[in-house]
Image (tube, rainbow, N blue to C red; front, side, top):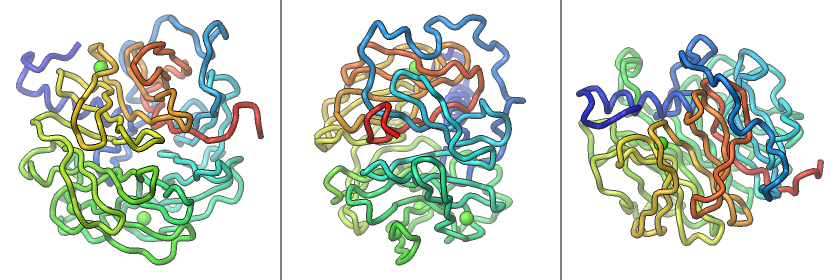
Length: 348
Ligand SMILES: [Ca+2]
Ligand SMILES: [Ca+2]
Ligand SMILES: [Ca+2]
């Protein structure tokens, strides 16, 4: 579908593909453009692997939270079993995206624009009691909960050095910085401070480090690289160093590896690498975007989004890339940003 040598605008196309799956996500704030009107011209004619699978293969024991427009506008946070069954809308047509679970599975942090701009919210795992933690007119998005459940990192452009008019013309927000706050929204601390993109922070399983992406070493371009820093923002270390776009890091539960998305082989694919950036391994290989992977709590699976079947859908695979299985059949452009709800399938 896409080829680096096909046209000079390929880079833009690839970035757009990433943004499509993530419902924008290419740095905050996200343009409010994702919707059914953007549905791919070629919706999946048939469902090659169906929605929920037929049960012939073992599937993840954990439930999965994700974003979808399957209930109509606005986009919402949904939960389903690890085999794709029982999809349930948790945010009730009020707006939710980028869900991420607390380690004990009792609560979910997510982004909602229900109050007029992107804010970080927390709700119970059943969708009850959504609470706005950020309450700030700037964009606050992409939360990740620390392993002890005590703090939440997220990105925001509240300290923007870039005029709003200029921001709207960009797909990556150079004003975004990474912040940490207590899980009740108190004690906000900024961890990065520069005029480049710093986005999509993700806690390491030991709670000591935070992975994220930034274009700080490629300030004139939108291609991001992956970095890791200490929990207090110190000791920033670059993990990837290539002209491609590397995004959306998520750690393995033992902390030894990181899964992420890169277009280094021509279009967005899912990779893993050692936590120090060495030993990259590509897990997907197709000409459509594969995006936003997340490692399962039991270490056995990676959930991700892919447009390989014409629309954006949620898939799972083994951590070696085998057993790639589609779980959703929404036929829409924005299904994705899937994460794990660390409770056993079937438990409520
Ligand atoms: Ca806000
Ligand atoms: Ca920055
Ligand atoms: Ca791909």
